[in-house]
Each structure stands twice: as structure tokens, then as C-alpha cells.
Amino acid sequence: PHQWRGVIDEYRELLDIPADTPAVTLGEGGTPLVESRWLSGLTGAEVWLKVEGNNPTGSFKDRGMTAALSVAVHQGAQAVVCASTGNTSASMAAYAAKAQIKPLVLVPEGKISAGKMAQAIMHGAQIIMVRGNFDDCLRLSRGLAEEYPVALVNSVNPVRLEGQKTASFEIVDRLGDAPDYHLLPVGNAGNISAYWLGYQQYADLGRSTKRPVMRAFQAEGAAPLVLGHPVADPETKATAIRIGNPASWKLAEAAAAESGGRFASLSDEAILSAQRGLAANDGVFVEPASAVGVAGLLAELEQGESYAGKTVVITVTGHGLKDTVTALEGFGPVVETVVDAEVEAAAEAAGLR
Ligand code: F0G
Image (tube, rainbow, N blue to C red; front, side):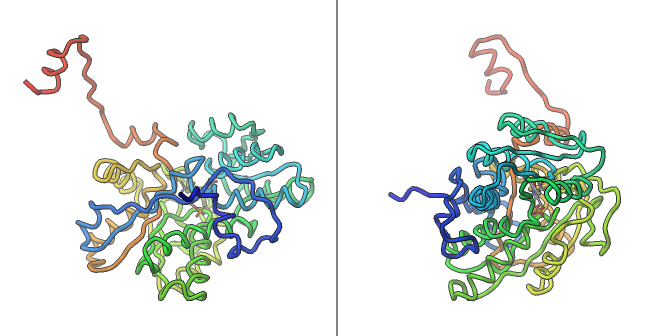
């Protein structure tokens, strides 16, 4: 039986990284494509979830980070830096620990979920809280990497996209062709750009007969790609995508335009509702930002859009355990029953008798 080797060694010949780069890997990628019976039922389409929360640090960032860290280490880097809303920093810190180089993280003060912060701390990152938002953090990270000996591993580093595009390869390998539509959340816009690279590459190689229409979604309070201009003070409960000026803006716009796709935005309420729906109907618990593609599909159905008869893939980007506080806030009052340690008492409380 084949043991998955991580995305670099699974797809090395398709990645634009120096051929002799040893992989710094935690076995990322090879994530499940799970059919959403709930969404297939609602749409009359075949709806698949690409469950990226199953990566080693619980988000899709690991695909790009194995590539970025492998190349940085190969080039002699002693330290890496990133700006993050939480997942990139968790991932970078883990891969830096694996490579035994120094991780330096810049995050917006007070806007990172406890789970993500714990990951960065446990992996030994030096964490700098910035009085500002993600966009400020990214500006600082770029500045540090320009002037000091630290390698920048945000997705402005093109090697990150090389790793992340492997998600498209896995989807086509599994489905036998590209889907008709691909839906996903957008924050700093690296992921949509990477998916589009991957789909184009597979189509060019003749491994798929088509390219999907890319439909990308943002939170209403942080929707620069929908508005067509940067947002100075982005705000959303989906903190992972609380970004006002995405670095890969141009690439994301190209992905939408070239694929015949588009951007749309959702309220926090719609996002948290989709998160609950996915957990309750499909058994897939994702973090709020990761439910944005699902919220987008539900909103489009309400607007009369039809996906009937089509194949749809939705990337759910990160694990629900990343941010249980926001999830439970969205859930509302939780009824907890406390009983004496007796079967009869439990049966009574459960309404079984
Ligand atoms: N979903 C999750 C869970 C994320 O953490 C992010 C980005 C996105 C979606 C959006 O992806 O930026 O490629 O458009 N998180 C970054 C971070 C910004 O720092 O962890 P994108």
C-alpha cells in the first residue's frame, strides 16, 4: 500500500521549484474529497467538499508551507517571517520547527483565534502583535524581509502557490476530470490564484478536459474584490479572511475573469449559518472563514442560480477546532443536562423513557 509522501514528493515534477530541493514535509495534502449529501440534495448537483482541515496543522496553508520552507531551507535561510490572520503562522511555525529554523510571526493584536495562537506558541514561534490589521502586518513582514536576513513566506512568495496548486491536482486525480464549478473563500487571494494555476496546468497537460468556473466569496465587511477597491478597516467574525487589501489581487481577478467566474460577499450571519449547516448535515466541522464557499452556494441558490446536473467542488479551508469560541457564539444558547451517574437518570434526561 502506498504511503502518501506529502505534496512535494507526490507532485515534484509538476512544481516549479529547484529539482534537488529536499522536502520539509509533515505529510500534508492527500486530503479527503467528501460528497456533501446535504448540498447535492439542495442543488441537484454533485457537490464535493475538499476538506483541507485534514492537513497536519488543520488548514490548506500546509501545502504552500512545505514548498516555501523547503526552498527557503535549501537556500540557506536561518529564519522565516510571515504576516497572518492565524493559519499561515500556525503552519509556518510547524514547518520551521520541523526544519529547525526560527519562525517569526506578525499578527493583528487581539484578532487571532486562541487555537491558532496556541499552535504558533507550541511550535516555538516568536510572536509579534501589531497594532493594526493583517494588511499592516504584511507590510511589516515585507519590510523585515527586505532589510534583514529572514525569508518571507507569505503567498507573495510564488513558491507558496506552487505548493497550494496541488489541491487542484488532487481533485482532478480523484474525480477523473476538473469540476464544472469551484467555489472557495478569498482573503489574501493566494489560494484562488494557486487553484487556477493548478487547473490550468492539468488542462494544458491533457489531464483534464476542462477548467472550472471559479466563484470566490468574501465576508461583507472585508470584500475588496467585490467592491473593486481596498477596504481600510476590514471587519468580520471570520477572522481568517479579515483582509482589506489582498496581495494576490491581480491574480485572483485574472482567475475569476479567465474562468468566467466572479466574486460575491456574504454576511457574517450567513457564514456562521453555513458553518452550522455543514457540521450538522454533513459531519464536517470547519472554521467560519472555511464555510464561506458553502454560504456562497446557498446564497446563489436563494437568488435562483442553478447548479443542477453539474459537478461542484467547494474548498473548506480549515478545521472547526481552530476557533471554537466563534462557532459556539454562532450556535446560540447550548442546553446542557447534568444528571446523577445512573442509567435511569440519563435515560430520563435523554427522553428515552
Ligand atoms: N480560509 C482560511 C481558513 C484562511 O486561513 C485563509 C487565509 C483563507 C481562507 C483565505 O485564503 O488568503 O489564500 O485567499 N488565511 C491567511 C492566514 C491570510 O494568515 O492564515 P487566501
